[in-house]
Image (cartoon, rainbow, N blue to C red):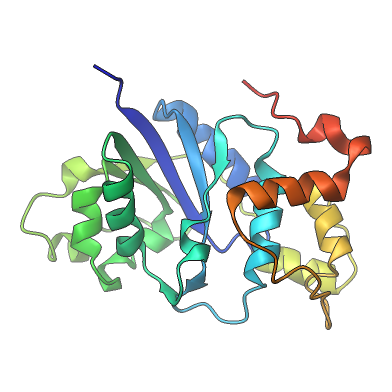
Length: 239
């Protein structure tokens, strides 16, 4: 009998993906003994406005995760038209990957708002567990979410206290606008992409935004951009 895979689902706008995202994913990968963590950039996230073009967010995410073999880009949500709803994602995953257990990774601030989401109870039914990362000033509260469910959600939720990594994508955007360094806040490859496309400035470069946003094409695009001089950085070497 084949082993059931354990996959973490790490969603978000990733605008841009930060070192904090990578550290959280690595900690959860090890703590939960996952086979992989799938980074899943949101397409048109409900409640988010003025997010960067899908293509730019996806290509930055691929560049950020390429040095870790167990981090994988998944474009399911950006490929779907309309607003992004997590319940739709988990319904699709349940059909396409019936032999896989999916662990939904969220911060405690997001978790505390889940009761307002469409299909919140269904997400808890479909996910093997919701992994909640405690964030400063956002103590997790499951009372309102429990009120939506006919079953005890305690077994469906894992709370993790990780080292505090208070790196905000919004703060990074502001630093770019102010022409301040963002080194150590994001990976060097992400910095190169932000410079290449002039992101988070008054008139970002719109080139390539209509390119095909599939995982394979994005990987090829990243390799094309950084070519041979950075190829060692692009090789997934982390075990």
